[in-house]
Amino acid sequence: MKGLILAGGRGTRLRPITHTGPKQLVPVANKPVIEYAIEDLREAGITDIGLVLGNKGRETIQETLGDGGSLDVDITYIIQGNPLGLSHAVGCARDFVDGDDFVVYLGDNILKQGIDELVDGFRERDVAAGIALQPVEHPEQFGVADVDESGMITRLVEKPDEPPSDLALIGIYVFSPAVFDVIEDLDPSWRGELEITDAIQSLLEYGHDIDSHVVEGWWKDTGKPEDILEANRLVLDDQTSSTDGTVEVGAEIRGDVDLDESSVIRNGAVVRGPASIGPDSEIGPGTYVGPYTSVGSETTIHGAHLENSVIIGNAEISTDEKIIDSLIGRGVAIGSADGLLPDGHRLVIGEHSDVKL
Amino acid sequence: MKIFTLTCDRCGTIVAANELEQRRVMKCPGLNCQSVLQFEDLAADEREHFFENRNEYSI
Image (cartoon, rainbow over all chains, first blue to last red; front, side, top):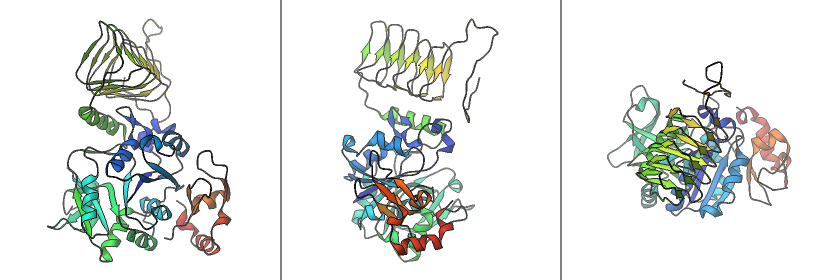
């Protein structure tokens, strides 16, 4: 079995962060979100992975992941170019898949419990596809599956006014190569894309069986800033911490704090976990790093109070203000305006930024 | 919709026909690969189908 990670898309809901990089590389608990998908595939025994790239950030993704060797997988890059839909992305992988069964995993999704059960279920039953589902509060906002008593899918409905169930498609699928034939027969939807739900519906209409698997534990699509914070919170809650860095006398650590060996928590700083502090970073005197915060690499913080936030990296924060529920991009400097006249905030903010003062 | 791709002989990167057609002649998008890929490298019947259904392959 092979794996296919879809890493196209423009990441518009994550602007301005995605002005300078692809959304799949935004870190959650100091690890690019796409690495969670790669790890899930690897843990399911799938190491031959195709990575479908769009126009945005494709060089950066290749530079970051390389041939996959550092993650113990073998990556083949597939250039989709224009975002012509998920079925088009899958169709571009036909030569890579080469007649095998394969898992499709959206590159900005994170699952608590991995995909082992989905893959095992597909292998045990003679079906054309297996689809991961999860109960949601507002099924009318999702693609929803109607499932019979044996767990087989009977139909799919996209954002229905009257949902047949509360089981939403979460963006992880297992397909047999039969899907490529139905993709060939698809027409673009009203928005000009080849939809994955249309491909699955076509499989049903051609008489193929499609299995479902209800995912236990949390699942997050990290498409928006608040989703990144939520995913960061969920991952940190489950992390096994390793405080390898330097904790000076007079610094205080409470709870699970993952501290890289090259980083330091200075005398007078307080870090309360769960939290993660990446390489070459310094938590300076008077700083409070509160629960559910990830501080990326090469970041210096002096005097600030941080909670429930993600600092992507290469940042310098030297204010004594309280910063909460924030996603702070690479290379950002947040200083103090104390003593500057006239009194007031001083901002240099890029397009699509979101600031609350 | 038929989907056509070309695989770089040197690095194995797979490129969709719409990307090739947009650039006609391009350096392989595989990192550090110096191969040159062309829309003309696709089979004649694939190119013909692509042109006849060009609207489907653009946003």
